[in-house]
Length: 399
Image (cartoon, rainbow, N blue to C red; front, top):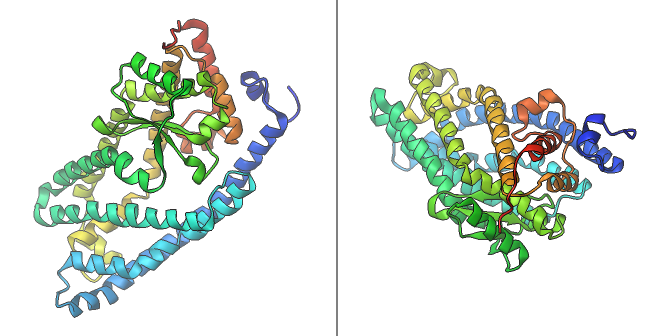
């Protein structure tokens, strides 16, 4: 192998350019170095946020609801007041990390397409729509459930949250995603005809094929199948079409992979896994929640809202353990989707290599880091797996 490129990488990708490989490693190193800083900053701001929430709950929010003629027992009003008072902090404390990632790291490696105006606009929309809006839509019913349904509240809480997650997956492509990007029907041409042939060959029910202006924010590329039931749609980034130079076979190989996820019902599998996690969380809530937990955090008195809030805070500490198992599961789904692309007659290896080059993907990550944090196999692992399939699997390209 040429100097600088590991033998394992060269074996899978013999044409990898040494300078591009070095740049990808530099990009990964820059993200990892800043990741340590971001994690430390997140821990510090998280502790400050806990202190701030307790302080505001016990003081200013209580005075505000009393000024409105309510009492301390009106917990949803206090929660709303607390949210209103802490909004500047909630909005701004994560901004330095996101700003550095966007305008320093991503800018340095040529990925950032944000202007200051678009970055601020997207940040505000993410905060008010996803954090405040969706957060309130989920939290208010849960508080009512815990406050009124006694020992069986955990089961109703699980049922409501599972349905809420399903509802979000249904409406996100049509109500929320368009707030951040423009989705237009994929133009007529060879690529659209190729994708339509894939849909027919797979038998999935999906007539909506969109191109999204991902280049508005970043030059990273992607494609996906989103939604459930009548909101299902195929979405292709404009950057993917650019990076693959409009090559119909290469684009269709990627889309065949994404269609594979839908055809093999991976969306339902992931929903099932999410529901299992939610069930475990609420069952743990039933077994472990205690009024003393609320006062131990420093709040003046327990209530349903604070019981949920403090439990979710503590439960978040064990979530990384679940993410390791979840990542292992999703990596198997990626292998299966690659195999589906092969069965539809496409060799996805060239597309994977091209996308990894343009996205500066880490071709040789630390195995332990990959085990804990990566939801996809490495490009090298995927290319080798596809190569093994192509040696034995018959292919019939979609017409």
